[in-house]
Length: 180
Image (tube, rainbow, N blue to C red; front, side):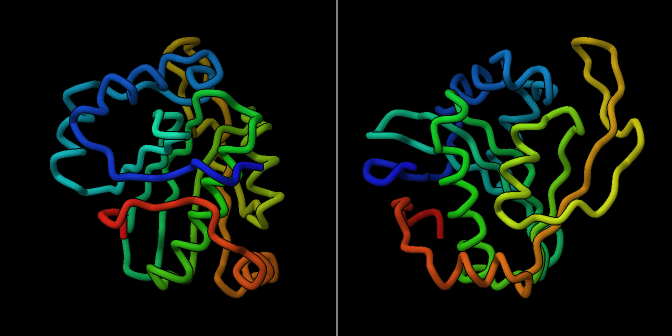
């Protein structure tokens, strides 16, 4: 569990090398296709999605990508941490749930994850997300040429786990004021 020294800030074009390097990590490539640099640059410029860099003691350590297709809906598009299973992913998830329901006033957070990404699925389920279905062969891994099922998860503001988390959570992640 991370406490001190964890922060989130909006990504800039200067973060492109870090973001691209995250997508090259083995634990990421097996579950996510890397974005093209030109596409990523355009997304950052346009602001069509919110991309946050997670920092530990001032050093980039992860990425969070959120979309808002509707005012009531948050799409959790990506959480990538440089070093998995150290607590940063959970810390980012807790901040995301708090941010979604308290600050953005959304009613639902949705996400999709390849079925074989068991570590991520375990985290989402511990956070109270409900497996709602699957897109059969909905993900194509360009590295391996293999298809896998894509699991659909959702968390509602009214779900018991959301309420528990919001009532007991003390913010531990400092967020740059530009992120609000």
